[in-house]
Length: 201
Image (cartoon, rainbow, N blue to C red):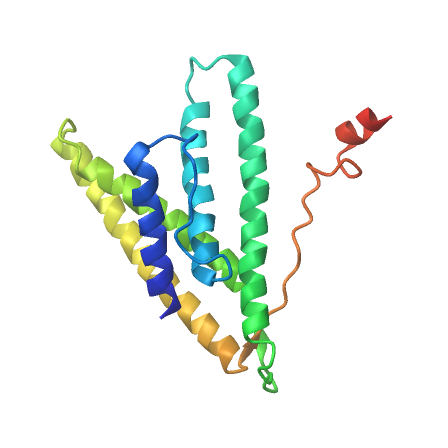
């Protein structure tokens, strides 16, 4: 199943990040650049770094200048994340471009890559919730509550994985078709963001 591979790669990326646990560490991708595995690893690495950006920016003692710099890094990360989702969807569009669409075939509420995006975030939630369960300095009540949340997250991942694999299977067999809308983010565009447009002159 596709999601078995995706989950393995997401967990591999998360574990690799936490060896140094540093948002500024260098990034290396162990997979060939022309492979879907390369895209999945890169996608999760972006999510993992951004997860920790979000932790850092919530420090109540953060200096305003540092907070602004971090906010811009988060904005850039969001753009990278969106780009990677579109690359992953392009992979599926290309892979199934010759499939004959069956009469009555439907369209899904989201593309495969946006569902995979949620699967990547779930891998991060599970990793960090398990850290809370394994904390030696936590109270038994804290551990109990976090274990309940971890159980729900794992069930959610199982359900989402099943749904993604079914969607891919349906696309592969013509029962569903892909229709991808490129993200039309406006805040980074110096023609669409009025603040940036005003500074061009």
